[in-house]
Image (cartoon, rainbow, N blue to C red):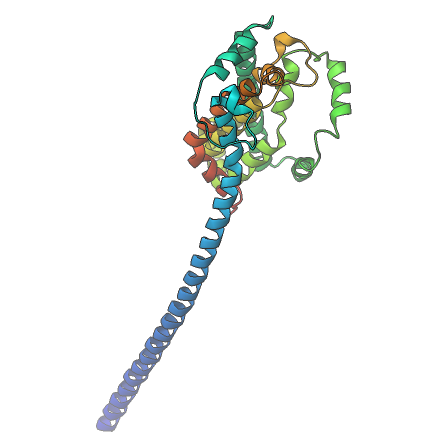
Length: 320
């Protein structure tokens, strides 16, 4: 009996080993097939993505050329003498470059009763004031909507998103009525404060906070006794640095490139772009030189900070 029991046990162990070996062989075979299949699919995906990337690259190069041509033509015109400016058809190159157009630009501006330093001060003051206010209010509002669950926060967010579809032209009449009631007409305030209510900046900051700042982190800080202002300034803002840098850059560029507010008519309150627009009607060369000076600052800022902008735009569309 003992011998029979031992034989049965040995047979059972051998069967288990055999079944395990067969199972492992089947698993190994399946894994090899899966690997081959994935390799084939991956090769197809690579081939498709390579072809797609080539097509997208060609399309972007063509679009880039069309976008670059106006800037190049403006730069060339700013260096052309008057004789080359009147040639037909117009040329995209300059034979005898000159800086006379830039000299004429500053001569014409200085001939006005408002000095050029006043226009530059207005431009810098309005751009900085609008950018700082937009950053503070936009980031605080984004943090409140994203991490403070007050009653009706979803309704507020929907209103903000829907307001992006409303053109500023539609609300110009109501804005004028409000500005008259507040006494903001023909003041610095009307050029700065309305920009603080940037719904695009708020939405951008809110999306970035949602994807980069976890609720658990905020709750842990609250349990440790941190108040909302401390959480906002010491925890949230350092984590969303690319977002608020992008907001600063885009807001500054937009304000710098914009002319004077239509509700401002005093020449002493207008920006450099407003003076340039007036002078450009007198001389084409001076107008081209003014356009080069105007677009130089935003282009340099974008080249220096494009990595931050790309990171923010990519992260703002992702959500855990």
